[in-house]
Image (cartoon, rainbow, N blue to C red; front, top):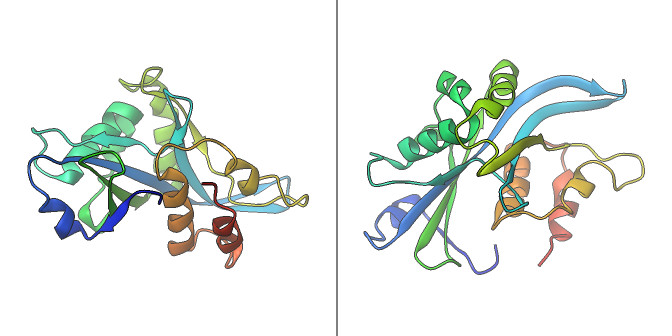
Length: 195
């Protein structure tokens, strides 16, 4: 991730009071659906269209009143996605990585939370009623985890969109590490990363 330094969580938490912490989460669920009767969906992965026209993950800055990173993240999820997120909680066990910079004195923490498909669909249905819908968040989108026969449609075309910060790299890393794609699918896409 260009200009960012990967940190262990303990190291990130020891940076001191001059640092702000932002937390974001990839929400996903197994999806038995089949597109056009032949393309297995395998998983549903949520991202959001942000106010600035870029794709990112739900979340935001941890505030002073939040007692932990996860409390701040869960508060942000309620604000951005609505009350359906009260059916689950993102915990420390869902933590994936931390990166410092390139923005001065900001540490970005990334989480991935596996939901049931019913929970994920409830989040999608309730999001238009969330406090930040139409303001910070313009809508949710599912990531297509397949490649069409032309070799471009599906995930390769999705990755051509504009992403905020390290969201594209976080998505690709999580898809690979969590086994959400067929083996080998992400490696070629990582190598085609934009600068």
